[in-house]
Length: 640
Image 1 (cartoon, rainbow, N blue to C red):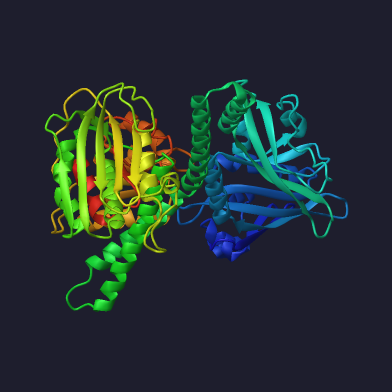
Image 2: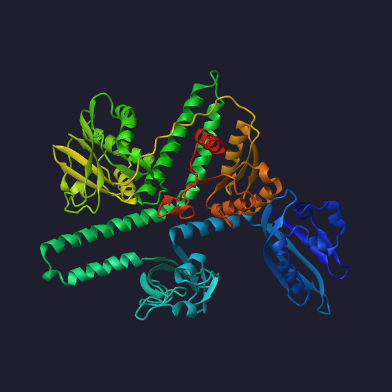
């Protein structure tokens, strides 16, 4: 049945016969001819998902005992084997004696709506935002799961207003307290609460508006709440500084300015982080499908194909790659990108980048490197460090107008040294500096260079996220960053990376896929709730010759693992899914097969497989969007 289409039923209670129209019969796998002739009443429950059967039986029993209206939402297993959400609208018809005579109604497919609701719930959870709806004067309010989580309450769709307000600290406004200007307004408010579960005091911000119903004339208050505890703590610290400002020396004034800057930067990162985290998962799913589809189309072109088609596909691929890079830069700036740190020798990494830097800079830039052999080892994500160095080099090239000298220099700095800002270094660092002899920057410009979307380049020539990304990556890696510049005399950007004990790991040779298609005696289970991404992954592996099993969630994946056992050689699963997460599924799979390798794929894994923003030890992650080439290489790497 198409989304939203309806089927209908009519139950003759006295004759105990059930009549279905053709659409409902086809939906639950019953011959339409049998349905028109009348069926036993148990046919109504034939396709209902087992976990929902008892609830619906109770609802039907209510119809037979006086209830007139039947409105239930539940799951069914269609004739095609797919799980759907349906909404049943029914009514009981009474005879002249007031006894139930007929029970009829329609069945509406609401699967699409449920998926949208689930995605909204995931987005709210990722952004830490709770929603509410309340009619002034009513004793209960409609709330989201995240609303309950912020207050430390068990999840519920409705809560008594009194229960919510009991958590409010003395002196704070109540959550649904109308504005002083009248009941038609719901002004912004900051509310201190004592969480119900752990008794922790938190500050929550409430934003909302009053919506007047056109027909009834009533007013509903609709809005959101989110945690602002950290911002309030910083504000309190600033207030204390201001109260004693006259007694503090100049050094303390400088400290206050630094705190203000930290607050401003934290607020920007929080805003961008919440936005990016909320959309990264779905956005990267879309980009995976786009990149994968374009790759497959390009692979099928040959010398006889229209050059315009190839050019259009290539341009589409470049656009999708730029969109993916933009999302990654936003995650990097907000310090929410998953890092895979390794112990590396930065000298060795720079030596491997020399040719890449030379190509990026062009022949008119004189590239010079100072790389001492005794540079210490650091623990960082090597791929992200390469991106940071490349960003700094390209920025320097642009600042020099395409001609000049660019110097990349490494140095060891012992604990106790100071940054030009006066910050004392608490430990040993390896310092990587990128210097140019370009136009330089003013003090005012330097104060903005790490802000997201700030750029001095012409419109269309920069996103303003390059230095923001470098800043976020360095801070997430436990390091620091410093910038010095003089108008007309060039700029130096220095990255401070903490020194680590131990030897650097030897770099691994890049994996190469054989071009020819070959049949492999290996089975891969793909688990992905997004149908388009799942289809792309399946098509990739089928084309390479693998045997592929697929599931749209954790429950169906576990059933396949139980059925096929050791015949499954690799589990590939999304991280963030409704029901079981990818981590929960992997744990369940390892109970069935402890040696089964697992590859996680995700556009934004949040904290499911991360610890302090870093990928947990032993976890293999392929970030979305990925291409046919990178996906195939990662699969082969794990199977080998």
